[in-house]
Amino acid sequence: MSFIETERLILRTWMHSDVDAVLELVSDADVMRYVTGSTGGRDEAAAWIDRDIEEQDREGFSVWPVVRRSDGRIIGRCGLHRMADGRIEVAWIFERAVWGEGYATEAARAVLDYARDVAHLRGLVALIDPRNRASVSVAHRLGLAFDRVVRAYKRDMLRYRVDDPRP
Image (tube, rainbow, N blue to C red; front, side, top):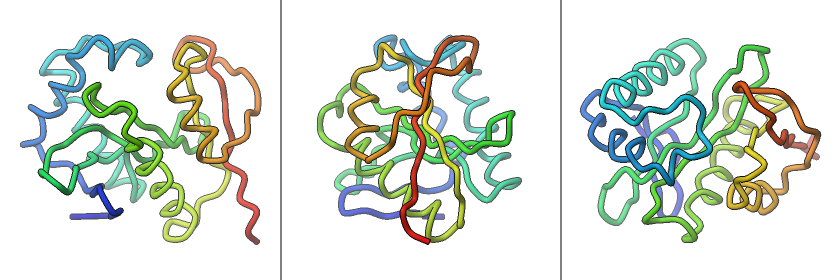
């Protein structure tokens, strides 16, 4: 099922058959260097899919696969995740081959619109490793406001908040 569509991307629900695409993503050390607890194995890829399917069923959202329209390839993950403290995080991760092409910004902007207009969610945050300059740049392009440094995922992270100026 497709949740979100943009000019170049489709964000949809996960299927267990997506495991090879996720495995390719989590197996790239450069892609995973800012992601906590990653081993890059097939079991981890399957576990990511299982967690996202479970969260979709429970919450009505998850971190969805990002499919490039032009070739149907899964090029990353982007979506929403409820953290242990109840806040909802907008998150993204993309394969190295598409870095710098604007896919993260396009997908995350569409997710933020979905969160606001469809799911009616407020108080979203993005947590970014301070060394991850590319994701910090995405946050700035999205208009997210730096809030503070927080302890999350067993390390210090930059917390950006999503300000919604609309009533």
